[in-house]
Length: 562
Image 1: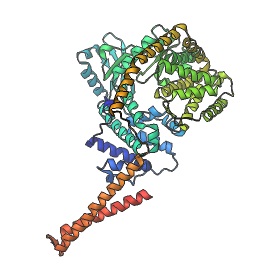
Image 2: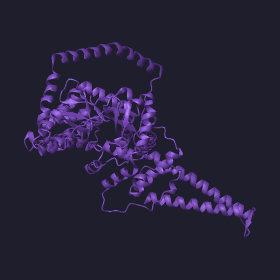
Image 3: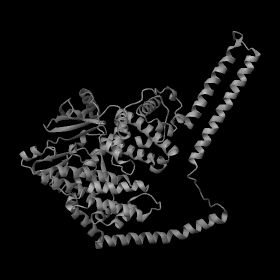
Image 4: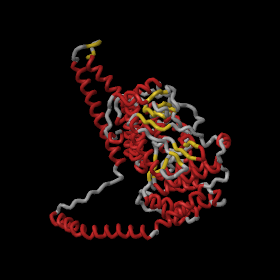
């Protein structure tokens, strides 16, 4: 799995070649400042001087945000997916960059249909005989796999999802490089130390592990089906387990209508308003009741079946929230709707993963202003997604870190709210969510729940009462024997260490340069053969090497000062 190999950065030919491609693209689009800030040339000695720095992207009309999007698109599917993954992280990136990243699309050509069939037959072995026919033309193609229509011997049509050849190896190299670059950012850049990009890459790698292994998607489908097995308004595609594995996924073929095709829905006697309400109720139930939700419910991943039945597609990206996280988000939602900035600030601080001291009054004032900006209309007209996103944006200013699942949740709410607005101009997500929020509040104080909490607390107290005396005895014993240790870490030494490292490298280079000059001079003075015009060739070569080294050192020093 990709996530298990992070940190094991190896300078193989493939990795170094790809690293050079990535850095060249960054420089091409004018991000040389980022490359030098990470000090990559110090870690990737091989080939750094070979970059063609003349082919820079010169279009001055494009913003930095637009150039970031172009970089990701040119670097291919792994980087596009990374851009899509952080396109909802308003705690990491400014709004102009997020808007550009939202435009990212997988622009990949489908691979050959005959090769897809060969992969299918290889993976299924004897079971491939169950496939009566296979359409070589894909229904859809993505960066990781593509979908083909097939027919089983029983006559049932199925959708066959097949992983691209060698895509796992390609992604593994890219993610290794991403993690290495993230490590350099944390080491040499202040923003890297704040946002911890290595953690973001590690989370991204775990997501890719799941997307590359179709058995994870099959498991997601089955869990989702269990959640809604008694719900008649949702349909979950059937998984054909005996025809599926980690590279191939065979599902029930869904022949429905896209929710954006309003005229087609009306011609089939289906009410767009009813579809909007059902879609909202389903996503709210997934989030607040089950804590397991479809994290990418855009119109392309939803089909409408007869009788207003909703069917989700593509279960590769799912969000998970435990009970406490659901309750805290419900608290935030309720505080915002009730215009309670004090409560909203309190809940927001509970959501964060930071223990830093924060100016509470200033935070409450900013949240109050945001609520005023959005609640000037009636509750029915409130756009929940933009307001929650604006409040989470405040965390950037205070350098607070919000757990990633909340941003998946926000993405799901925003997409559903957008779709609901297109289907029904009077659609209100806040009104649909109200009953579920109230149910969470009531359940929190249910006698059975309170009794359970009391039991858990008493168990913790009993455990502490048993363990603390022994722990104190061990601590006193270590103090008495002089074995107690305290570890201290100075967080501000990284820039100094980098500077000292650079100085030591220059001193070493200067010593080597001086040795070359002195050695060459001795050889020239002694006229050591072979000679060229009475000048020793070895001594002359030493002077040339010394001149090149000296010029390179001066150039590096001047560039750092500039």
